[in-house]
Image 1 (cartoon, rainbow, N blue to C red):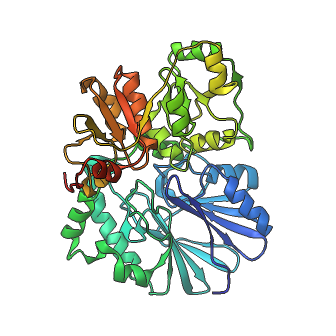
Image 2: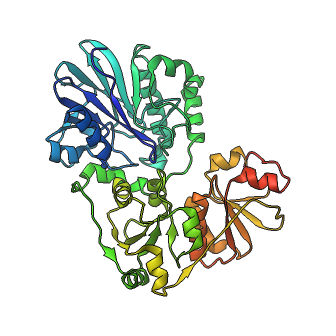
Image 3: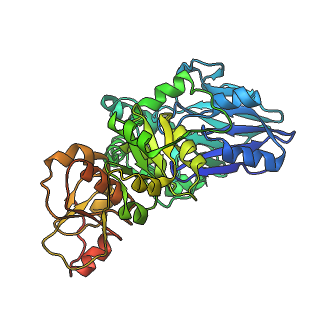
Length: 453
């Protein structure tokens, strides 16, 4: 290969990968850049590159694209499907169209399925294909879900996905596979998978390729589909219109505790991003717990409204930029401020606060066990008799739950604390959070985990 391997920029929270290709003359191609361009800018600076092209494989549902931002700040040319009907300047491509990158060429391949207008991009060095950016089509060990455009069209798009993947697998074995969606994505990538692969490896080892025919492929794909955050319904159209341009530095004001209490009374959400033990010790009454970590962004988009003001509570050593940029990636521009002085200032002002019991696994046969993990996690192994309600459904289900002694569990405690904070907001007063997971609880209670529904 006469050019360096693409730089992979992994967003562990969203489970996605953006790519930078060094074009050899100080310019670079960015594929599926995210709106949070900090890591990409660091990579560009370290290599002395500037982005000349920003290519999107599809209208993303799980993050806002950074391609329009790169066009504005870096004078990059945006490459995208002509069928996407984007409402901002771009070069619209159709199946078979090619772009001269200056020595390398990029060929658009129509690969509908994940979305209608989905393109993969084949990178050619002369006439030799060296790699293909597959976006949400062929993934490592999987293919992407097909129910995001319209649930009524899931089967239709699954059949299109079958044909698209088969087309990609006709490429030579040595061609690299560079997908966007990867482990951690709600777009159906398996946990623990590698981020990149080759056509030969996927032809030989991708489980969905072992389906005996198209019907079996469609059945297997549809049966594997789990739930996904509600913001997925909005971002495709937001990417079509073009995300709003952002400054290099995001900023929110510090608000006094009385000011925060006033906006909360008017309908704002107090979002507490502190670690689980800190939230358990004390937090503003009614606050929503979503600890700041890589998965923060997905749960923000699942649990907090995008159209109500949000005020952040954090520890002094937590990075406010990280909170704001993670939120911006999924279009949450409704964070109006942060609590000045944090929880200490709140309690000093004698404003309402509560604690949440954080419990170790111990014998407790009479307590209700509430498992709030995803369906696949629950079915892989759960405490006998556990009530299963996914975290994303807790708010809707809370009013149906009797106020009884309850321990909430997930894998480690972060998601469980989010669920507990929602339950407390609905008036349940006997809730505790397991510091640990189902294995610890089952062992302490002399049980074995059960699998299945």
